[in-house]
Image (cartoon, rainbow, N blue to C red; front, side, top):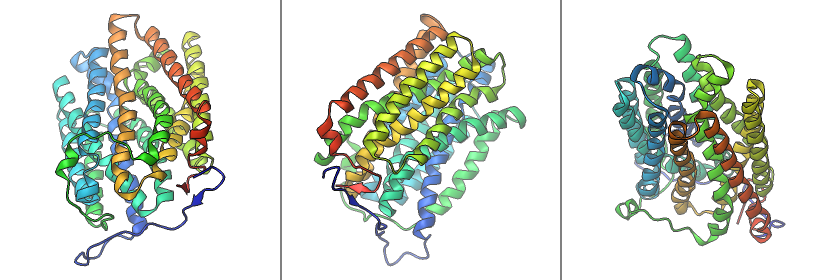
Length: 422
């Protein structure tokens, strides 16, 4: 297709359901249930962020250990995305989601009963495997129900989940009893309710053979999305690398700037980043995807620059302003990347393709964060590492912008708006 001749999708996708099934949730309710699972899973992934200071004080964890605990989650997600990401295209969305929710609840139990770093690592591995198995099925399920709203929700929901998980966890830790237990127990209750809802959903795809073959990692891209993925991948990597920094080292950096040990400040940075990201995604959903992605790159560079200057000047206000600007970059870059790719995929390709995009995201989130933890201990310390990390993100974003500008033919072939598909 060309930018001047989009085909707009306005109808809701037809869902399939075997005749023997009983009463099921209406498709509209099912759609929002799936979006809520994205939010709760991402909230669970960011919930430990404000707790790292408590874990460090109780168990003597070093910054390297903290980033390893964080990075091992990203590695587990990557593993699951590569091996389990396409499973729901063959088994169906519901069975994969029910299993993922159950495993996620087990991870919460391990967190709540943890007594040291090994337990945290185990919990993060279990949590990452569950999240990696679920995100493709959830995102594809929303697209099955409604391609237009599904594309929007796939962009908005992760930011909402990451933001709420960090801040709600921090508030629970600060003001309620049992800080290392209560947030995880509350999440178990949420997952139980969502499992009941998933069991009542209509299945949106017909089961087909070949499920075992999908367990072998396969990074092949459908021909129709190869160029859009090449354009979007650097942006996705850059914005999630920044999110990884705020989740792993952000709390320590913010506490140093504001001169307070409050865990609320520890979760506030990630909340501002992800919350503004979700808001900007909602506000820009009907703008041309390539322009949104370009806006995200520019905002990311400007926001990180402001943040680094604020760190040098010891200005907490400037730091959060820069974080908010970077949040616009995060949300715009992420949704621009998702929107340039996902509407082009066929139904049987959606879970695998979305999983591959998340591989890029979690590689950006996990790898640089672990390297940063090592540099904090063995190189220049927290402030120098923050500056080097920020410069690296800006350079990567700059390269992504050059790639976007130098590919006019590629950009012209991308979906113009959220409802435009090939």
